[in-house]
Length: 121
Image 1: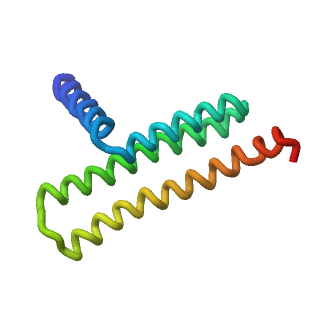
Image 2: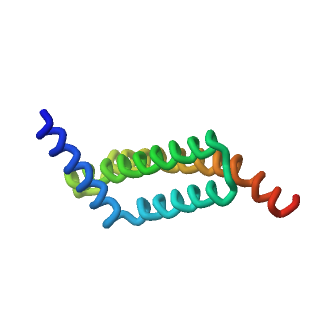
């Protein structure tokens, strides 16, 4: 059982390595995640605000990974264009868009008041 768990962990790490090497959107997510953490440190956000940011980072990276997996699986199964494939890919991308807009709203709620305070507004 431990051997199977180690094998699964190794495969997951290979998946992370692949997505970092090949997917621009994942790299963008990593950069934005770094900036959010840096902003949290600079603005000394609260424990709960940091917790929200960390959860959003984890979920965002997971959703981007799932979106990529869906697109890659569809491409591997069926190379030709079809409306059903377009819908599946569009809906998968929509999940990431919905999450990103939600994360942006949370970031605005957390950071904008701190930025305005810093600028004396």
